[in-house]
Image (tube, rainbow, N blue to C red; front, top):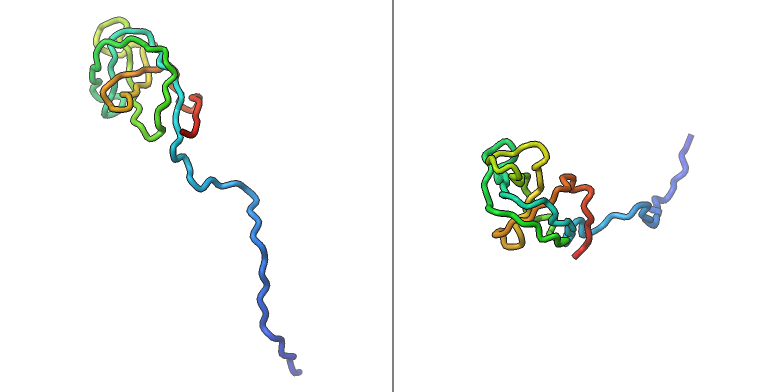
Length: 120
């Protein structure tokens, strides 16, 4: 039985995306958090919790709602309310060193997923 010759052909289909994908990702995204930990001696863990804490000095909350890049360094830390030089229950904070890494801002909201975010 002979087969009939069919000319090769191509079909063009239009691509229609069915979900949104951001082209720029989290570029220029900022965290918005309040500097709200009670005053005391501020410490942070530059090498991670469980390592030696570094003392930044006396801390007074500025109560400002800061905007910091999600690319900035945030550290686990504590405010030593009892003034015994170590972290005790209820003293945990997240520390942001400021835009020039020479300051200390602390928030008691330990879950960064709950922080407001925005594009700068």
